[in-house]
Amino acid sequence: MSYDVVVIGTGPGGYVAAIKAAQLGLKVAVVEKRKTFGGTCLNIGCIPSKALLHASEIFAEAGHSFDTLGVEVGTPKLNLEKMRAHKDATVKANVNGVEFLFKKNKIDTFIGTGKVLGVGKVAVTTDEGTVHQLETKNIIIATGSDVAGIPGVDVKFDEKVIVSSTGALDFDKVPGHLVVVGGGVIGLELGSVWARLGAKVTVVEYLDKILGSMDGEVSRQFQRLLEKQGIVFKLSAKVTGVEKTAKGAKVTFTPVAGGEAETIETDVVLVATGRRPFTDGLGLEAAGVVLDERGRVAVNDHWLTSVPGIYAIGDVVKGPMLAHKAEDEGVAVAEIIAGQAGHVNFDVIPSVVYTQPEVASVGKTEEELKAAGIDYKVGKFPFTANGRARAMLHTDGFVKILADKATDRVLGAHILGYNAGEMIHELAVLMEFGGSSEDLARTCHAHPTMSEAVREAALGTFFKPIHI
Ligand SMILES: Cc1cc2nc3c(=O)[nH]c(=O)nc-3n(C[C@H](O)[C@H](O)[C@H](O)COP(=O)(O)OP(=O)(O)OC[C@H]3O[C@@H](n4cnc5c(N)ncnc54)[C@H](O)[C@@H]3O)c2cc1C
Image (cartoon, rainbow, N blue to C red; front, side):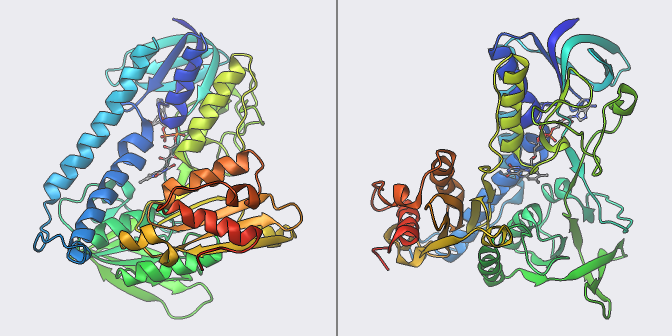
């Protein structure tokens, strides 16, 4: 079996690369070791977590704000089984969608574990032990990432009491107390789901702030809003032990600055300390493919590894571990293989935390601009002063825009607020085109929309906001 491109892994990186390559006229095969396509994102990541986040958000809203809005539904009752069924149906529809797209684009599919045997050679071993030998001009490694543990701590995941994100997407009852180790995106999203459904949630975080790389001002206000929702934070805390007990589990941690150890007895522990690039069993070393110091496949600016004809994209290479980053790399690498000029602008990759309110950002934080010695100006606008936000009872948060002081070019934008993940994109487009805060401030925005707060923040960056 001979191909132009064989893609190993069908997450957002791999399946998008395969479709794009097929659209560009190349003969393509994909190899996937899971029984379904779509990778971490569609099966156990972005999609199931967003189904639970949406359902639990409606549940919480029904309990809090429906009454004020004049919608009397009584005390909302949780049917967790149905909520999980909604999540599973959402996953199924999405993974089936990828299968349909493979067929539509005449992409051959192999279910089994792929191994790189050398330049132009991939072996696929099925669960039954059958081995398919594939010959190809190009290989794309898109094998993604797997759960990372806690450095120096022996964590024994059983996905019931001590769980990774995968277990936390599938509890069959709401835990009484959930301790989340790690105050990053995944920990805060899944912590929010179970807090809204009634669990007591405690987040233990090594850094002195949540969402480590997020703009400091946004992170502080976001933490206060999550605290109002009942989530408890233990910051600057180094976890030294996670163990099962007769009643559940216990988590031990010490202050990072030194001091007495503290132990929390809990029902369930979610370890959400990050993910590691997944290259197990791929045979990369024997094939001469070099990994970097963090175990990621080393690639150049064209996603080419140390071996000609072998490329790598997505979570398994450097850069933010985000589905849309993997997708964009998938498009770019397919274009490069097809002889075109594939490109990804790493300065304009939005990131979103799908909590309530959401946090969305693109470009530089204030801390990064200060560290780079760039002279910048700031414009801010709170949702309390936005009519649409008031009408929807979603006045928490603000928009913050950072622009170069001399040129007015927008360098970063951060939104804490309802639907921030949808609003961030006008800023991403603006930045992609090298736009200024004045460009945005002079763009007519429909009234009443929450996006008017984005325009007002831009007005504030460039001159003065009108409505505050
Ligand atoms: C709970 C959770 C929520 C998330 N939410 C978001 C979100 O909202 N937004 C966002 O942008 N990102 C989110 N992410 C991150 C996102 O899932 C990843 O960034 C994305 O999936 C990376 O895509 P990828 O194609 O590189 O790899 P993956 O999606 O990890 O896919 C890799 C695929 O390769 C397969 N594979 C591995 N080795 C082999 C082999 N040898 N042979 C055959 N197949 C192999 C794997 O089975 C897998 O299907 C989330 C992650 C988690 C865990």
